[in-house]
Length: 578
Image (cartoon, rainbow, N blue to C red; front, side):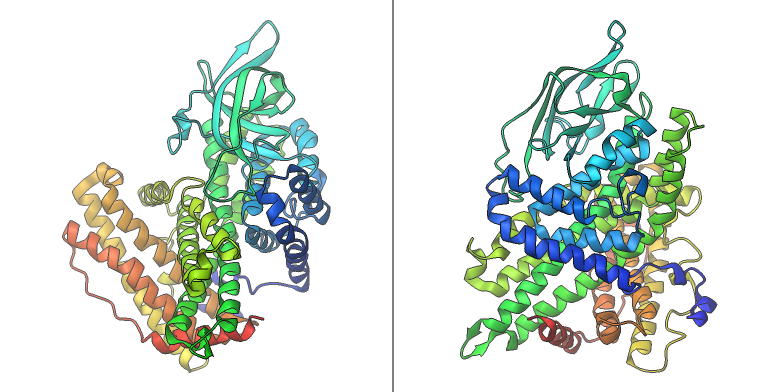
């Protein structure tokens, strides 16, 4: 791999699913065994709201170390590397509503305490959360504050007489509300602004509304949290007064990336289910897997999963230094509370655009793949007796969770514009060390189809990047500071930026996987070709629309024939599904 260093110094650090050891395989197999032996057989009980089953599964996940994979050992975790955490999160994502519940618990509900709590709070709560003995919930959304969650009306006031804070208000659509033993609550503290608190379930005045009647994710409890003059001690305050917005936004940044992993788990399972069904279902005397259009569907499903997964794993590697820096700051006893919150929040917010666009890409690929899986099942896909029908219901929420995909597109472009105004962020495509700005990812590969396809895809990537920069500059010149408010234009820029990052991530992964096992090696040329075509179709086309709007002339981009490539990908998928 030394030759790779010659053309891209940062490439050796790119995180990909292939960069795994026997230990990674073991932790993934542990998670898979839990999913298939413990969770999926109990889905009917979970969907019916059986709290005892849900809590028992949390405890089993805790015993196996699946909740605290990357949590420090001092707080009951395993303190494993980012790749281990990715493999576990994606695998747990296959458990539908249960995956949503445990994703919330181990992410947005646990992270505020880990990163912004003091040592007493970490010691009191984290071991119980890691063990699955107590379930946690994150209470931000309110009836009149959804996407605009930072302007909620839940209030907090300081009661000097009793030396406590008094919380009042209602939180809506709170995951785990009915089963949680502890809530991270955000409230407007008088004269200070949004502030975060850790609230125990058994506090007088805490109550939970009726279970919401949702379209899907029935295995994830959802209800309102009602706070009626709830007194909490001073020790319940998280971080610093008036800094709750920093805690909420930085934790949501991580949550968006974690939601991408959940969606990828669902996507992978849908591909496996659809391929298995296509091999079994016979029409006109033959398995439907032999039909060209069914095979094309499977080819696109697998290829888009590959691209979205490449982007999500790459971002995890880019997030890792910021998360480490944040934890180092969080554990320092010498910092003042406000200084610590600012520093930790800044460190956790290093990849805003990448996290937002990962969430958008992964959830939209999830929607596409599950919809196609239903289509492959035909009428049976619409029957509740088939798992794919439940997956279809469950999938819709992910484009709304953790900020709608519209809000995330806006956030990504705002971060991009902000980074251009100062210096490139850790995950920016404007970074000169980016593979798009380097010579060739394929330079170290032997002559052949993979190398020639990668070289063609790289040329398209560079042309897209050049065009993107030209359109952004023209848009800024035309709109100035108002650009971020031009939502129709921003949407097209976000899609172009998303596919730039995704294509680049896929090409990096393919270039690194020449000696690995799996589809990245076996289908390198095929996956590169379809990723290239998809990037032009879904990324460059919106960019052309934006270019016309701001008066920039861009030449069209060609891409290779996909038909044969998709058939080869489908054959590979079908051959490996039993």
